Length: 484
Image (cartoon, rainbow, N blue to C red; front, side, top):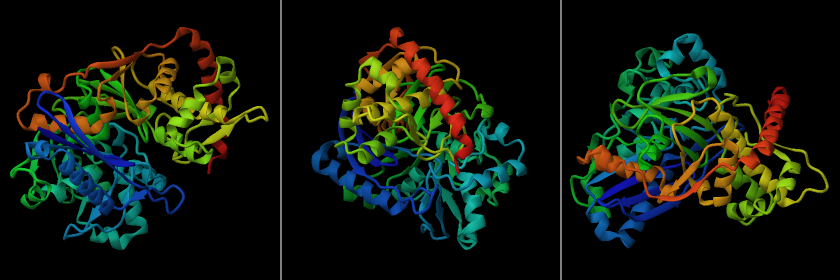
C-alpha cells in the first residue's frame, strides 16, 4: 500500500494506492489563499500542516487497515512557492505562491545579472518562479532575508515536517530558477545572483528515490508502521504525468486545475524560453518535459460562479452547455488573465476582461464565455509546443465536466483521453513515486489508467472556434497597453 500527498493551492489531497493499482481511499481538505495587496498571493504553511493532519485523520477513520499497511509515501505539490525558514527551521513569513506577480522588476534584475539564465534554467525569468521572490524579499524585507537560513518549496516544507530532512526533487527544483536543469544540479551562478548559496538549498534527489523516513511519533499518531519511506516526489504537473503513465517522449496531458497546463514528455533537455515555454526535469531520472502554463483555469470558472450567482462551478458549466452553436458565436469574449499570465505572454500585468455585452446576453452566455476563454488560453499555450505524438490525457478538477472536455478537444484540435482516476492527478502520481521508491519497476508502476472516455475534435466546429480564437488574440493585443 502507498500513500500519495498532493499539496495544491485550493486543497490538500491524500490518496491510498494498492499494489494492484486500486485507489483504496481519498481524503481532501480545502485551503484558502490570501491576497493582501494587488499581485500578491500567499498562504501560511501552518494551514498546510493543519490540512495534512485533517486528511490523515480522515484516512485513519475510514481506512485504518490500509493506512497501517503503507510502506512508502510520495509527495506532490504546487510549484515555485517560497517558504523562508530561520536557523531553527521556523517559518519567517507567509509563503509567496506560484501565482504571485509582485517580482517583475526582480526578474529583469536576474536577467541582467545572469544573461545565460534561459540556457541554464530552460525558462524565462517570471514572477511566478522562486528566485525573483527571494530578490523581492531581499529588497523589501531585508531583515527577514538576513535571517533566512533555508528556502523550501511547499511540498518540501511538508517533507521537513514529516521526516525531518530538507530535500527537494529535480522536477520541483526546476521551477525555482536556481537549478541547472540540463545538469540536474543547483547552479551556483543563479544562487549567487539571488544572494544565496548551496547551504541554504535542500539536498536534491530524483523523484523516485528515497528522501527520508516518516518520524516515529507521526507514525504512532496516524496508525502507521515505523520506517515508512518518503520518496523524492515531484512538482504537481510531473506527478500528474506519472499518475497517468505519461513518461515516454511525446506523451502529454492537459490539466484543468487552479492553473491550466499543457505538458509533453521528452527524452532530452529542450529549452525554448523565447516562447515562454517551461523546460523542466521530469520526475524520473534521465527524462525532461516541456510545459505551457496559464495562471487561471478552473479558478476562473470558480470566480465566475461566485461573481455571477451560480450555485457552483458545475451549475455554471451546465448553463454554458445549453447554448446553441449560433448563440456561441454571439457570446461575449473572456480573457482569463485574473492573476496575470505566463505562457505565452509572460505578462504579470495582464488582466481579465469580459468584452461584447449587449442587452440580449444572459447568464448562460457569460458562463460559456468563461469556459471558452480558458480553453482559448490553453490553445495559445499548445501553439508554442511541438504537437504531441497522440492524444492528450485530461486531468484536474475541470475534468469532471464532460461538456467542457469536449469543448476543449474541439478548440485544441487534439483528441483528449479521460482515464479512470484522472481526477486524482498529482496525488496518484505521488503514490506511484512512493511505490517506485519502494522498489517498483517503472513499466509496472507507471502504466496508463483504463480509458474512461475519449473526446475527438469535431471538424464541423473548427471554423467557428478559429474565428473566435482570432478575436480573442486581437482583444489581448488591443488591451495590452491598458494593463497596469
